[in-house]
Length: 316
Length: 252
Image 1: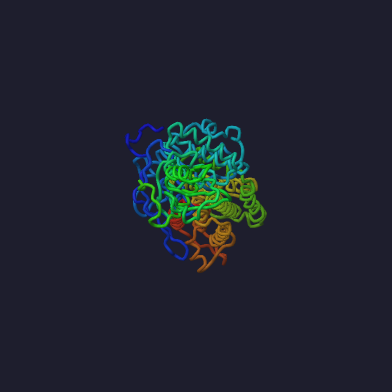
Image 2: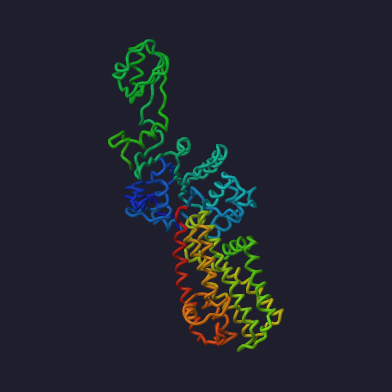
């Protein structure tokens, strides 16, 4: 890394009251980012989740100094974003484009390396991105996964402390996606701070320690992956011959919704343990199964949440 | 300027053979037809002959066409999102434009060398100062068109716009007297256009500023006229190119 390091205790990323507007169709002003506060400590691996248009890419553009916010401010390792980019402390794998098709893989890396102040060796970066065998290949002839690994190699060049990935696996097949995350995991294990935007829930689940959910330009939930999952309702499934009517079932402890799948009942519950104890001790229900809420459930619930809907924890 | 980056970019530009060969071959062919094989080629001018004047005009035309061709590569880069990639490096907008101008000047030097070489072989007559100064002045003037190309390519990334930009270049070349001499009010307007300035500057060592008109008489341009013209257009289009390079960071 570069010779001077940020003072200890400095956050990897600090966004305060970030607002960014765009002029949309018909001159209507669109609030792409609407008051985002976010702090990320060093060494954290954070997923930024949200539907299209949630403001993820705009937020990341501000972090990278590619666009200026209309209000609020961003600090990357205690610096202005552009300064952090110039010093090579932050770099990114961009969502779309970003490569010239008529260059070869190694030419691309050499060109970008020549612009950095203290880049890693070109061979080392190619090696770490698994591109050594493809060095002489034209970018246009590389598969989507190979192009994504090339962008990853470019992001490694300045040996950044914060690595930003904007939907890095969009359009990749399962194998390419797995190869990409394997390379990424090695970087995270080495203590790099990683912030990635995605709408693949399983990726966020598998890779991040912390989830930040965005919807309509705001952070709607922020917390450890396990907590977010737990904060939503879980389901309790039972086999119950000759069960009572739905209205009766709905009055059982903590039941929020009832559905029937043949002989099985599936009850959504906020306190599944309490419900399970009740079902097994006071009713003829048997064959009980508690299923964790999928992250997808949590995601949909939180990003569609009407005002006053479920709140997990105060966004940090 | 970042030499490693510039050389890789140059290599990439020269790899597109079609445009390189075209920008080299066309002015050379024109010179053979309109310069070397015409009977009035040996008519004397202040420091050489008419063949040398045609040589300078066509070399200038080739150089500015080649330099403005940066529009195509800049537009392609813009389209492919390379500008966003560059924005994640310490490279400044000024640094970006300097690399483009450097590459444009190397590419522009090819037709200049080709046409001047052909002129020497076919006996275009000029004093030594013409052979030394005119090529240098042509390249100096080509900076204007390198900036023009970068600005157009970055501002309008569609191919249609780039095509329109090369069309405009032909109009400017006409106003610059590259094809036929001008006269009257057209000449008065032409003096403010960029190709005119570069042409007049490049010819100055040969003609001392004497400019042929359509009516056959010569008018005299003082040296300050092309100097101010080229200087002003370099400032205007250079600033525009740097401003346009800012667009590179936007999402495609």
